[in-house]
Length: 237
Length: 342
Image (cartoon, rainbow over all chains, first blue to last red; front, side):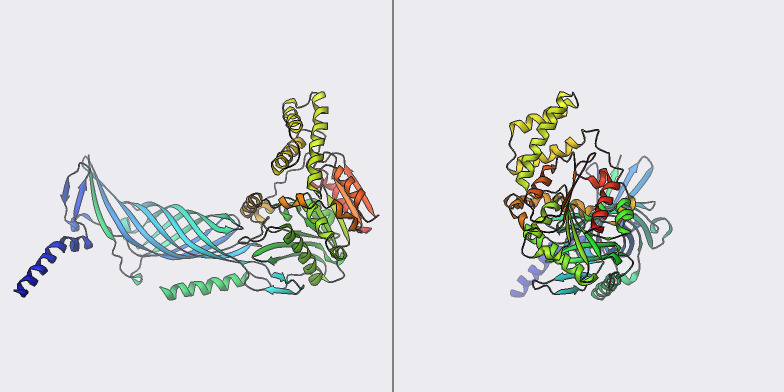
């Protein structure tokens, strides 16, 4: 009797959760603009899956050069197919988490080291071009770029090594790029990106640090397999 | 991933250390030294430039609050002053390119910073160094505020006051009076009637006391300077090398902070005039005739109360609040001549 109840319970659990298990892999259902849900075979439709990438970016402004190194990991993407008469247009809406370490040097001011995490929303066209926007949070440690001296109350002068300040850092960014995988199956992309970083508290207020960067993103297996959650959308006219 | 982050941190710190110079002090010949004075978490940048062999250091205490020492560094000061003496460009706390996370904004801290700066210069460039304080505008409050405290004036060889606000209450009352007097004369002559009517009407309806009135008077004072053709228009201050040399966004940020913090609010309780008898130093007073921001009568107040007898005053006839910009040749030449003989 107890065994039967257990068997029924297990069966119920399996029945209840089986479609969630499928959803963890790929959602194989699509939603059309007209409101119809159509089933598609994934193998026939998806030709591109975003991968983990190593990003290297030269950034700076007119007065300070710098660079940034990091990784980006896709966690979801939506493949959108737009049907217009006899043509199919594909694009991908991708979401990444990026972790990076940046640095810049400004003469007679400071060197700034800033690790940060960014949430990136990228709109990838099927011909390779994309544009993206990002939001970042991190922190900043500056090192003033000249010898620093402090004087105690009794007049003793001491040199301070590695003197600087800690700040919180927030950033927004926007850029365009070209992903060589979509047309030529090459595992890299290049991009141009504008960032606005804001450091706080800068003397109880903020200080903005706008930068422009040129970057290179390389996908290689050493970073592990990406398993982004896939959604699929079809738009028909 | 953790190792990756660790390697990046090590590389970053190594590169940051590479940016730091050792021993930046030039002890003979022409100097172009850069270092920082740290107070609390404030890192105040200092540029020392000029002929160190002279052993005469002119320390510029800039205006504002929230101004910038290097804004005074143009072709004139380089040619006329730095070739003969040393000029020290120092950004005060919460000003210019000073970096930090905040801290004390009380005027006593500014005074302490001046003392520490003078101690540092003496320590690094030699105790035989002679220090001259040049205070301009807000810096013209800080310089006498420092000099009247304790034995501070013993550390200094001379005091140069340029359009300085040593007494804020007196300053505001004189500004109001000057705006009314000049305004009525200009209106009688039919010059810039719209602008002067606004200024004169406001001044007659309002007093000079209180921070709001003070702020409004300051605003009108700056506007009034633009209404006189007699004032020599400054040459363009657009100098790309200067712009690229410092952190302009830091200046913007510090300027806003200085305003928010009302750093000069306590100055109304520290009039300085009644303490000037303590100052026995040789003193040079330089004022623009059309300085509405800090009227020339403030120089007369200093002459009246100062304890020393070696006091010289020069009024620049085609200058406003910044004679170093309106008549730079004459201004800097006068300073060089005075420092040579004191």
